[in-house]
Image (cartoon, rainbow, N blue to C red; front, top):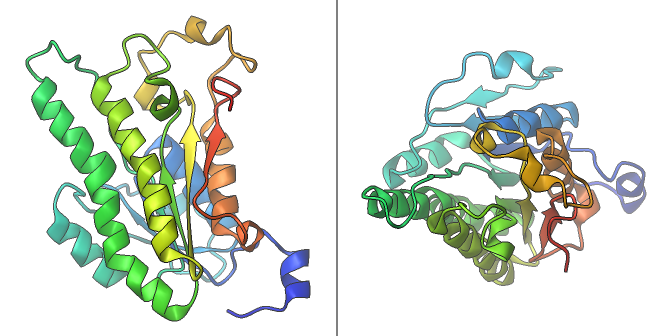
Length: 252
């Protein structure tokens, strides 16, 4: 997979020859990301908790062997099994996450808090633990974690749940923690989406976005583009950064 500096400068976003593992692949951002990564030349190992028969059929092939492996990310044993079966991974996109809507006054809050921390925080840590050592040993790799604007703001909406914002704050911390230990061989970065038009915000009121500089929901592909960038040679000097993709909802 080695390439000259001249070749990389002319094709900085080309993912040809890269095997990328993407979690949460059946959701809105996951599907958009899978499609884009395949279009850019990557070979994909996709996972979600349930099978998605139509997912692979929509991906550009060109002789590549994309795979889907169902995985319950609440179970470390299934994560370990998936990572062992995936083969050598060049980039890991940790997109799987949940957005429980219970408030801390609700009876379900304790269970939802535990689920948010398990899926949004512990699961990506297990994936990284399983795959990072081999990436470092091979001398290259990328890890991209999905955070959220909620980690900066405490939630875009007044009803945004504590457990979601707290879990994504932990993800942002994990980006920095892992980046210091993974570099220089492996570059770890994050994406912090704002409100994006997926099932996660199905009950959100679009009128709350009117005051934003870009007053609308983001589209899944608008999150996929910077994810793919961070997997590419073009991001070769980006390390420990979480890129805000939120239409100006939060600026720093």
